[in-house]
Image 1 (cartoon, rainbow, N blue to C red):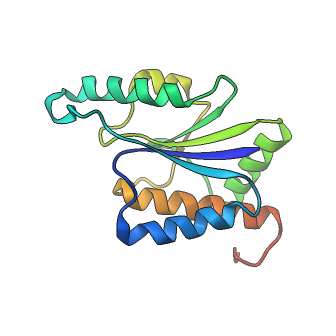
Image 2 (cartoon, rainbow, N blue to C red; image 1 turned 90 degrees about the vertical axis):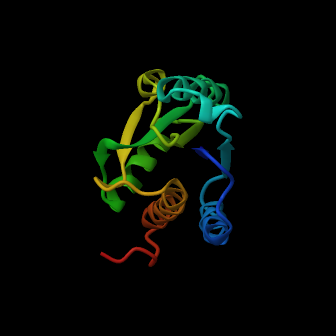
Length: 157
């Protein structure tokens, strides 16, 4: 199974990039992993919130494959503990999912078409975080889940 981490927005912030890259490299010990950053439309400032979400949705959909298991990160989704995330990832592997895609939407969230396409909606917290920090949290939590699956010492209960 491959893990695809997708985020709408600018490139990784220089201050966080090395940490994001570090956790991404750690994930590679368990699963092939790749980041895909989807740039906002060039005319984003001129678009209404709704039109911006539609434009971003079109870009997101071009990155998805038919069989992808799409996990949308959204504050209204279901919260998981780290062990529950590990179990969730293991289940996807047991179901022979070829690729699990974790998606961080744009600044205003995602269009309804993406909500409907999502196989699962996951909330990191009831709090709202800057996108750049969400990338770091996502990479760290996926790594933590992988280490839990292997019974390694990174995660302490």
